[in-house]
Every structure is written in C-alpha cells, then in structure tokens.
Length: 149
Length: 149
Image (cartoon, rainbow over all chains, first blue to last red):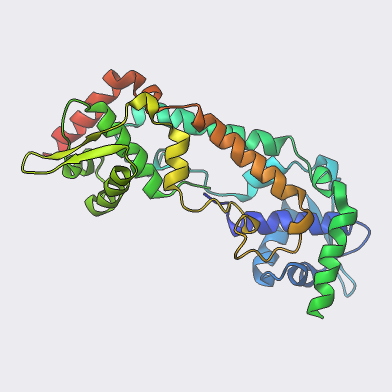
C-alpha cells in the first residue's frame, strides 16, 4: 500500500515552497533540492498552479511561490486531489469490478471506513502544521543543495 | 493507493472458506467462484496454510478448510501479513530512502498516524464480523458457480 510518486513529490514541492515563502523558486531548485526528476515535477507544478495553490511568475528571474496561505492548505485535500486511484481493492472501482461478493460484502464497508480513518488524520493537518519546525527542516534542503553544487 | 491483488485474494479466499466451513474446498472452486487465477490462489493458500489459518487435507476428496475460528482471525493481522510493502512514501523504506527532509519531517509522522488509523479499523474486525451476513453472501458465490458451469 503506497501513495504514488506524484503525490509524494506534490507534498514535497509544497513543503519546499512553504520553506521559501519569501522567494520565487524555480522547478530546477526543487528538483535539485530533493534529487527528483524535473520533468515529473513540471507536471506537478502545473497542476498545483491550475488548482490555485501556487502561482507562477514568468520571466528571467521568475519562478513559483505559494498562492494560498499554508494554514489553508489541507494535506488531506492535496492527497485526494493528486492521488488518482482510490480503488483500494477491486470493488472500489465500479467500472471494472467483477467480485461476486460486492452486493453484500461487509469487508468493502470496513475498508471504506479504514480509508476514511486514514484521511481523517490528514484532513486535520495543514501545510502550516508540517512547517511548524521549518527552522529544523530548511537547513536539510540547503545542505543538500550545497552538496549537489 | 491500493492493496495488492495478493491481499485482495487472500481476504476473498478466507471469506470463501468461512462461508463453507463444513466442507473441504478445492482451490479450483475458490478460483472459479471468484473468477480469479488458480495459480495466484495456490500461492495464497500455501501461505495461509503455513501461517496456520487454514489446513489442507490431501487425497482425492481433499481440499482446504479454516483451521482457526473466524472470531480469531483479525483482518488487520491478515492484511499486515500479506501486504509486503507499507512504504506509503519513500521515507518509510529506510533502505532506499533519499528524501532530505526525513530527519525532521512532520509529514512522515502524520502519514504514520494515518496508516495506524487505517489499521485500527481493520484490527477491530474479525472474519466472523465479515461473515455475519453469510446467508446473504453465500448465494452470491453459489449463483456465480452455476453461471460458470
């Protein structure tokens, strides 16, 4: 059971932007900061921009920055939006479900409850909560950048 | 975010055996009952047998049956045992983690809590709870077998 890399990198990108709120940050910087694919990140940044969480400033010294305040960015909402497949088992995907038990399956109900419990924790969490110890986290990204250079 | 087919079929196999507790059931029957791969199921049945949840009776009229009482089979434990990968994001897999945030990441802690909340629901559930409406579920499997024949 795992989240997609897309979701993982989406969350990391938001953390990076949250750590550098006073700067315009380039995709290159985020990619190098984490050692992850720039191409992959490009799609993520576009999506976050379309969803209004971040904004892009064009031009030579351009970049991206958070558009919403970290207090307003709920981690549960971010994960729901970026994670495409919540078919935790076959029957959650109604179009392709072939399990004969489905009409009366109590396991399906339990798995739905379990998934809700998972999201309840993330729904209560904002980007601001994650950035609460920004002073400890920021040097980790900076340190890594120095190593790359 | 999804469970593996291995886990999905493990749960279905246990439900099938729980629905037919007075019979010796063949792997063929379970595979046909759900329309799933017999080969895949064979590995699952071997594993459940090794783990002591079911027992196999050899011979011409042999088959498998539950060894433990459904009240004793916790769904959370079954899922934990059959799901190999709980690296919900990269940093959960210590051997391959490269995320620079890890030493001080609050998101990691939150995802761990979310995963625990997910399992808490399943830990409170036994196979007996799922079989509580066996009279409604049993005909669904039978009906399907008749269609296959």
